Length: 327
Image (cartoon, rainbow, N blue to C red; front, side, top):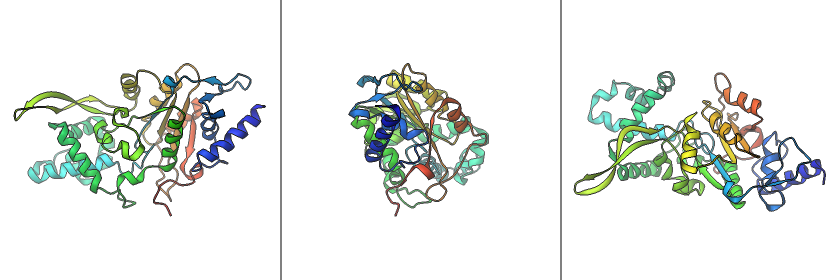
């Protein structure tokens, strides 16, 4: 079978198993997505070498890593920032100084420009104060309570409902073909763990993310895990590959991130650096009607995608449907 016929047949097959992704707008992404399941096995054709035979990928190497915010669900605004703001409100109700002290003042006012200018240090100070100095059990309870009542402001639905259907479909497709699917958000690991199974079908141990230090201490006669207000790991930008290596132990075969801050460039670069074939997917938010349209000031993620041959998905052109609640 010629390369052209093979491509067409796998593309048609992809349209059957991935119906929420436009068959005619495969610009980059659909071709390799289809080849993941060529002949019902996890085979890849080596890029740029049409005569080379399909390469079998051992089950142990079928690792797929996904960013979360903006890659698997809507990130405008970040659910965790809304959770953090609620916690700052509680703190300010008990002590008025938080209403006038940064970065808490900015969190209460929704001043995103402040955090953009102040950078990671201000964000870490905020999170250390709102996520730390409590038991891990208490934090998990608070996170679960948030997800039971909180709604995404634009769409008026729970945050679990603003997951991207094409990406959930893709994850199921990968798992059906022997892949482990991992989530590696820049946000807090335990915050994501309370909803990962219900939202994506991904168990808690397969969530990698940012975290604070913890100690096993005695409180009220019981031994518990106590979260300290000190950063342990920040799972974003150049630190994301480090966290993936620590938790998984190898480079992923498949990785997906999104355009917003350039935070997934290192993630996808790490994936591409593995020996043998690999697949990198970059989600471009260009659908103001169904979701949001936004870019980066210098277009870093799209430039990196062009330079490295990564596969860019247009939410506007490539996704038939974005959310389950769409009419």
